[in-house]
Amino acid sequence: MRGPGVTPIGPGAAFRTMKLPDLSRRPTSLVQPPGGPIFLQFRLSLLQLLIYAAPGAVIPLFSLRLKELGFSPLAIGLCSCTQALGSLIAPMLAGQIADRWIPAQRCITVCAIVESILLWVLGGLTNPWAVFAVSLTWWLALSPALTLSTALCFAHLPRPAQQFGRVRLWGTIGWVLPGWILGFWLADSQWMHSLIGQTAPAMLADTFKIASVLAAVFALYTLTLPHTEPQRRGQGLLAPLAAIRLLWGRAFIVYAACTFGICMVLPFHTQAAPLLLADLGVSPGWLPRVMTIAQFSEVLTLAIMPYILNRFSVRGTMLLGLVAIIVTLSSLSIGRPLGLALAGLACYGLSISCYLVAGQMYLNHRAGEHVRASAQALHSWLCGLGLLFGNLLVGGVRHLFHEASTPTFAVGATLGGVLLTIFWIGFPKASSD
Image (cartoon, rainbow, N blue to C red; front, side):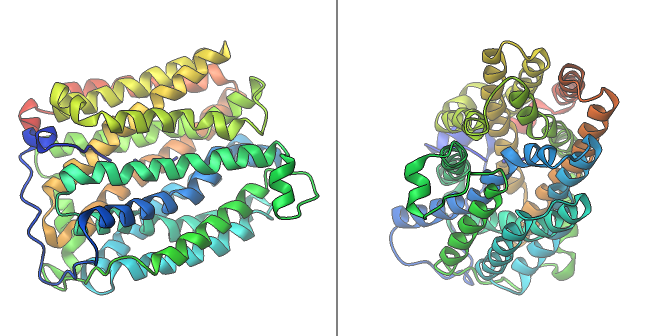
C-alpha cells in the first residue's frame, strides 16, 4: 500500500504554473526551530525516513505472510484493507486535534509508541480475526502519524513548493532500506544474525519484530521534532468540513474521484504482486529487495520532477501517473518472463510520484493555512476509502478466478484505463495553468 504517496522540488519555476501562494509568512503561533534552513530540512527528512521505515518493512511481505499462515484470498483481502480503515477513521480526528489543541509532534510520539507495541504483537498472531483486529489498531495509530508528519513539514518549511519534494523523497528511501535489511535477514545472512546472537532460522514473522524496533527508534526521534503550536483559531470543530468544501468545483471533484480510484487500483500491486513474484520463483530473501524497484523509480522521478512539471504541467504529470499504473498492471497480467514483471514494478513508482505526490501538493495549494492539517487528513480519507474498496476487490477477484494472476491484474489495468479517461476529459487544463 503504501502504501501506500509528494512532490517536486527545485527552482520556483517548477511550480510557477500552479500560482502557489506565498507560504513564507509564518503564523505568529509557530515557534521557529533552532538551526538554519539546511539543518531544518535534514531534521524533517529524517522524520520522513523513519516514519516510513516500519510500514516499508511490513507491507511488501504482508500478503505473503498471510498466505504462509493459510489464509484464504478473501481473508487476505480483509486483513489488507485495515490500512484503508485506519486511513478513514483516524486522520480526520488527528488533523482536527493538531489544528486546534495538541502540538502535532506530541501526537506523532504517542502514535509511534503504540505502533511499536502492536507490530511486535502482530508478529506472533496466526488467527485471521486476531490479525485483522491488531492490524487495524496498528493502522489507527500509524495513519494519523503519516498525516501529521506531512502537515508538520508544510508548517515549518519556508518554501514547501520547492522544498517538500526533497524532504518527502527521504520517506521513499526509508521505505526501501528495510526491504534490503529484511532481504539479508530472510536469506539467513550469517553476519547479520551473529550481530544479535540469532540462532534460529529466519521467518517471515520476523518482519514484524524488525518493524517494531524501527517504530521504537522513530518514537524516540519524535521527541526532538520542532514544536508546532496549535493555532486554536479558524472554524473550530468545523475545520474538516472546511477542507471538504474544497471539493466544490469541477477540477477538484475530478481530482478527488481519481484519487479515490487510483487508490482502489493500487492494491492490485501491493496485495497481489508479492504473491505473483513468489510464484515466479523469487525467494523470500530476494522478494523484499525486488519489491523496492518501485521505490527506486519513485526516487528517480522525484529527482527530476521539476523538469517533468515544466514540460507537462501539473495536469500532464498526473496523467503520466495514471498511464504508469496501467502499464504496471498490464505487464503483471502477462506475468512472464520475470523481467517483464520487474519492468512493471518500475512503472509503479512513477504512478506514485506523478499522481499522488503532485496531488498532495495540489491539495496543500488549495487549503487555507488554518485547516492545512485537516486538508491533508482529507487526502488520507480519500486514499483510505479507495484502498478499502480496492483491497476487498482484489480479495474478491482472486477468489473468483481461483487465485489466477492474469485476470486479477487485467481487472486492475481496466480500472486504470477508466480513470485515465475520466481525468483526461474532466480535469480542465486551466487548473494547471
